[in-house]
Structure formats: C-alpha cells, structure tokens
Image (cartoon, rainbow, N blue to C red; front, side, top):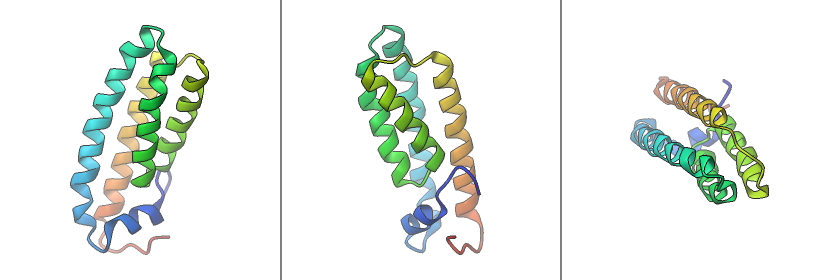
Length: 117
C-alpha cells in the first residue's frame, strides 16, 4: 500500500487501531492549519522561518507512518533551511498529499485483519 509505512502504523496501534483514528484526524486538522500558516510566511519571503514548521510536520508524520508525506516535508524543510523558495503550488500539493496519506492510513487502520507487512 503506497504512501504509508504499514509497520509503523501497526506499531502505533498497540493492538487497538480504533484508538489511533482520532489521533490521525487531529493530525490532519492541525496539519492543514499549519500548512495554511506557511502560505503567508513564504509569501512574505521569510523562507528560512518556514523550516521549523516543515520540521515539525515531518516529525509528526513520521511517527504516524505517513511515509510519503514525511519525505516531502523533509525535502521542503531542507530547501527552506537553505533559503530556496517554496512555491504556493507546492503547499497545495502538500495538502493533497496529506489528504491522500490520511485516507490510506485510515483505510488501513479500519481493515479487519492486518499482518503489518
């Protein structure tokens, strides 16, 4: 299943995947808010100031096993730390990747039988 690290998600569930679903929902909400805050920062040319936000998104998504989202945040964090521009379209793409990643993770967590591979 693309986009996610199934082993990480399985490890996070501790045998009760239903308990992770609200955490995943909260992550999606707070991440959408964070990405929304990045737009004005980047538009104002404060590129390096966005790196800590990308770093935080990277860390949280890695913990939740959202592999592709994690990797994209790592790329954007690195670019921002170097002062390389991050375009508004990339934030839109990041939002799309967030939605896709959370949907795949949610589906995985709701499957009746998982082997974690």
